[in-house]
Length: 97
Ligand SMILES: [Zn+2]
Image (cartoon, rainbow, N blue to C red; front, side, top):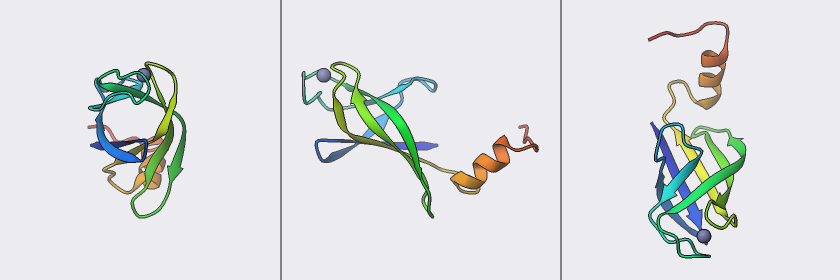
């Protein structure tokens, strides 16, 4: 499971991915620029922050008016930690379930 948080004007909000493969997330707040609800935000330029609680951090842009909000943070429940998961899942040894 992935926990997604979006920061809009200094406030953090939980976000959902409307579909598993969608490229944007939805936040149950109004767009600070045009008032669209829900606010749809797309991440740009991911940045993996490594550590005990590794997560991905993105610059965030609204879909409605293409203006930047603070950021999107995507934190995964990993099996071995983000780095190790990547190595295991993309390595020569595939795990099939
Ligand atoms: Zn907008």
